[in-house]
Amino acid sequence: MTHRNPVRACSRVALAATIFLLLPLAALAAPFAAMVMDARTGKVLYSTNAETRLHPASLTKMMTLYIVFDAVRRGEISLDDVTTISRNAASEPPSKLGMRVGQKIKLRYLVRAAAIKSANDAATALGEAVAGSEQAFAQRMNEMAKVLGMTHTTFKNANGLTREGHLSTAHDMTIMGRHLLYDFPEYYNLFSRQSANAGGKTVRNTNHRFLRGYRGADGIKTGYTAASGYNLVASAERGQERIIVTVFGSRSVATRTAKVEKLLDIGFRKAPSRAAFIAPTRLALGGDTLAAHTRSASGLVTASLRPEPRPGTRADPAALVAMKDEIADTIAKVAGEAEAQAAADEATAPAVPVLSASLAGAMIRPAPRPVVAEGSSQDDGTDKAVAAVRPVVVTRMSTSGGQQWGINVGRYTTQFEAEKMLLQTALVETTTLDQALRKVVRSPRGWEANFVGLTQERAQLACRRLVAQNMTCTPVGPG
Image 1 (cartoon, rainbow, N blue to C red):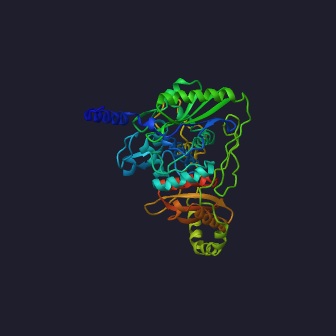
Image 2: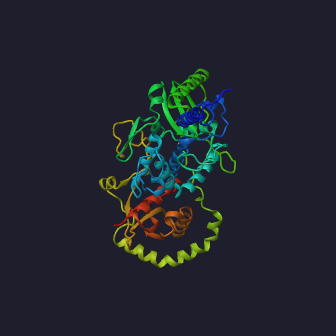
Image 3: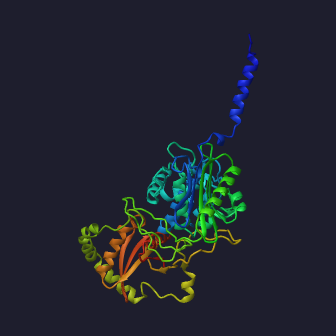
């Protein structure tokens, strides 16, 4: 009869438990999944478990950044806007930029930290800056996922930290990477930078092994949590061919990089040398297909596109009809004031003076700039813009009170037309103009439609948002 040594048996159990605890958590992570896509056409060249819902980890930040870029394009925010770091953002676990509660920082630095270092606090701060709260931003992420055709993705936060129900697929994340590449080519260079200045701190790229080791590699985003394993959406370009690969569930950075490189090789072997570019499409939430962006085979914009209006801000024609009586009442109410103002203006100077060339040059305020192609050594926030942007010339107008800025939304041949435009603009841009006063001023060249009683910041923000919707707007400073 064999007798077991209880001490030895306990030691074996303890040893087994220790080995189990010391095993890399990634080895116990979600199953492996992958997809290879011809970026030019969207054709799938290889896939395995690509529709399995898994933890995306920091691949999530691709959507966070996509929405930020979209908000800049719409005029909702500027990358030079300054935001205050909340306790919620500052308390996020690493990887992080390490910001303090109450710290003020430009959005462009948060963008760099999220894209390059994969900083969780930066991603959360971006979401709060755009939507007001992490919960509201997650809702916007999910709406955008539907627009982009990511049918098996649900977001719960802006950074990708593990949370129940925060899931995606290799297929959906490949779609996300393709949209990021072609919908915002002016920002894509961010993902290939080895390092960048993020507001006084230098951040280094979490994807440096792939970027340095694979010919043609230029991005885009890594991800890792214990639940997800090592994830990566990667892209490389060789000649006229571009391949996107997504990998979920690798067991280490080294195995992830090796697997991605092998899949890219498969993609380049399978993809034709030449292929007609098919732009990724965006769908309306109702299911109607929006017009795809007109781009060349290289992905660059070939036509100037009208920016999409911010959700919920399109003027309602029925509301304008209902306000017809208010237009007439307003005209009658301000008629005397307008005539008196016109007489005063004619006695002194035009409401919109002609600026000398030197003065006009000194008063130029640039419109919101995209993240620039910071391939140069300058990386201090005063970067050169990738694409030309329309300058906004600040003119002057006298106002009273502490808020002495305003905006001009055009000159019209009749007072009625000017009043109508003011009411229409007020309906379109309620966020910044809700407290502004409408003012029509007669000048030698027509009727000027103005909103007055704004701060400089609010006036410039209002114009950015209106110009993004293809509407006329000029900030007017105190004089």
